[in-house]
Length: 347
Figure (cartoon, rainbow, N blue to C red):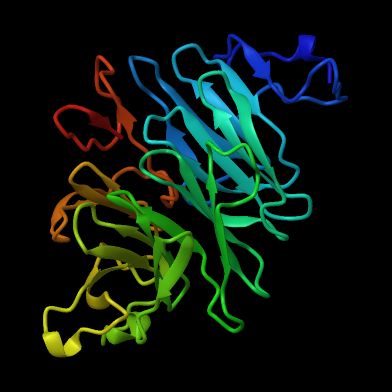
C-alpha cells in the first residue's frame, strides 16, 4: 500500500501513529486508519477523556486503538497475534490491559498517554484469556483462562518485575466453565466469577484463593431467568448483581433468615425483568448507578436497590456491548446518555 496515495481528507485524521512498526521490526503492511471496531466482545471500549482531552480506546481485531476525537489522531497498540478477547482499565484511565486467546497468547499492560507497553505477560494461560479485571488500586489484574481441562484463574501484581502470577488456582475437573471475572472494587480481597448457571465467590487471603460456591446457583430463583452473562459487585455492600440472556437482573445477597444462612454465603434473592426481555450483554457500576445494556439497544440506569432511574431506548445503534464513562471537566456535554455524579460523569 502506498500510504502517500491514501486519501485521509474525509477521515478527519491529522496524524497516524503506529507503535508496531519500527526500524528494528519493519513490516510490509502497517495500519493507516481504523474505520470500525470489534463489535461483539463485551467491555472492549473505554472512554479515556479527562482534563478536557476527548480520547477513547477500542479494539479492532488484534489491535488496540487510541483515538482523539478532537484532532482525529489514531494511535495503534500492536503486539497481539490473535483477536483481543479481554480488556480492563485502571481507575485513573492511565493503564489499559489487553489479552487474547490462541497459541502464543500474551497479556499487555499499556500506558494510555504514551501508548507504549509497560509490561508483557507471555502465555498467561495455555489457550489464553477469556476475561480480565483490575483492582481498585490498579495494582492487581485477575484473569480467567479459556482452558477447559482444567480452567484456571490467576492474579498478577503489576508492580512485580516477575511475569508469574502471585496466585493461581485451577477449577476442579467437571466444574462449569466460567466466562466472567470481577474484583470487588470496595474490597480487592474479594472476587467473583460466573458461568451460565454457576456463580463462584472468591476470598483472597493468605496468598490463596478460596472459593465459595452457592449450591443452588441461579436455580434458587423460581422464575426462568435464562443463563448468566455478566456480574458485578455493588459498592460498599454485600450485594451482587448478575444479568442474563432472558433480560433479567438477578440480585445476590446474604440471607436474612438465619435458617437459610450457609457457609456458601450469598444466595440468589430475586430477579427483575429489564426492558423487552432481550439478552443483556453488560453490567457496570458508575457512581451511584448500575447501568446495563443488551441486544435490544436499550441502556438502563438503576439505583442500588434495582429501582429504575432512567433508560435510553432511542439510541438506534444496534445491540449494546460496551459502555464507558468520562471523568473530569469536559467543558460541555457530549451527545448520549449522561450519568451525573456531581458533574463528574459523562457517557
